[in-house]
Length: 117
Length: 116
Image (cartoon, rainbow over all chains, first blue to last red):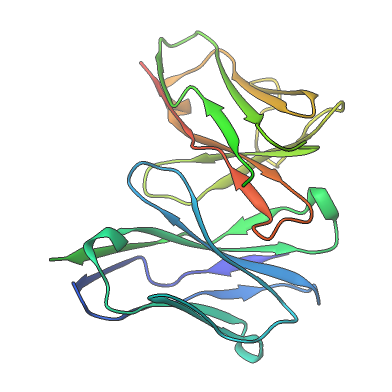
């Protein structure tokens, strides 16, 4: 069975601080995808990144960066120079790559990030 | 990019009535739609997977007679909450998997259901 653990439940930082959101996953699949989503108070899920299990390169997109460590089954997300608009719930998720259209997403419990001005 | 339109965005209904939530894929064919429920301050829990033209597959613990899912076309899936009760009040989100896309899954904007 697949499992995603986001041990941090709530994080509060002051604007311009860097913050790292942790994600640890469990899967028996050799091929899988990892995701991060942002859920602002309005509720919609905003896609941030999808990473294939064979691609261990770290990725940077503006103030966002992701560190994929297959050896420790972790896919951590760092926001540099945080802003108030970054305040949201962040979900890490995992899907298998075997089942095609029926591949399900397993979500972590989410991390509530509050960025104070 | 791929868009899934979900309606209504919020609904208030009386206990005992039924509510229908629609999800439409606007610019692609969604052969598979996933329905999630999210209680306040909790994660998204998969309720069921629906495939166009066939019966939905429900996750363990989800009452299929209470949460009716219809996926009659490649662009429309509906979730009907029958005989709603206050404990059904939740945020419901649909998602379509689009093979070949870089994002993998496209989510609707969600429906906040309040049963009074």
